[in-house]
Length: 379
Image (cartoon, rainbow, N blue to C red; front, side, top):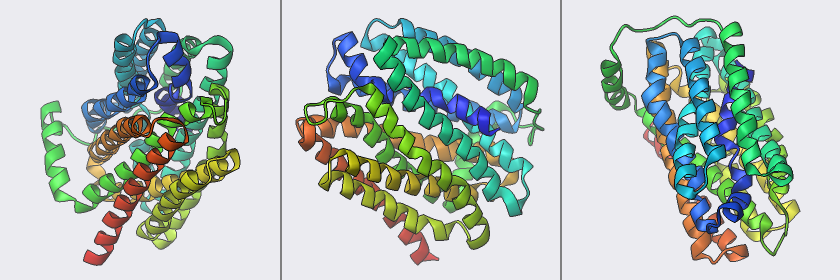
């Protein structure tokens, strides 16, 4: 399950280190090319909203296989795109297919006992994070050596191979409800009203994810600018520092099992906020490396903690609960990417644009912390 989550999640993140190469090849501005990760994340949110509820009613294995086949077609479309409009549309479709990874996480929570749910979610999240990390590293190197289109061709082939592998290896899931598709979608409203913990978790992680999205959406532009003069490979290699996040996921899960997930949230959100202060005041390669360690540790510990909370709310509706949580998270994350592109442009690019993005992300991190503190005060 960890391997499946990582392989499918990678498709959402290939574009981030390649944005500079895309802008040059298509003859568009840096601000315009920021629409690509935004469109992909909006597609991801749409895929979660439309497809993930079906995991409570149908065999998740079958859903995953068909989503991967559709993803392969979308990746081919991206590779063949000749302008921003076509590439943006293809990116939305790639994002929809990339939501496949989120079918795996609630299935892992279903198979685990309540006492080990945090560790099980952490294990699968480690696989997902590995896919995200390798996606950025590989796509940066491939874009520099063979062009950004080659990455999409490789990803399409990998999606088809993974579809065959999942069909052969992943076990069938047992449907938790016989409700119709329409009833499943309508029940999302009732579940949102029913669980304030779900609303808070989604908003908190949405703000955190918006900071991550904003950071990665402009990092390649910063590194390719006059201050650093580095290429897409360098932007991708910064993802290797994200190994800290991979290590944090299972550790945070174990800590959440022992001490409770709420005890992990406060410190994790503090790390996210501190990272963007560091990014702003120390915009050097060492500063960026240390900041990436902090932001990944904080973001992934927060993610695992919030998932431990929501998967204990209604076992029979984990697919739909994941739908609500991830849809809100990625919608806010997509807005974070768009806002970061605007902040970069308003700041005039370069170090001034970078500091404007850092200020935006710091505000988002503080908002997440305030939501957490309000919950603790109310309780």
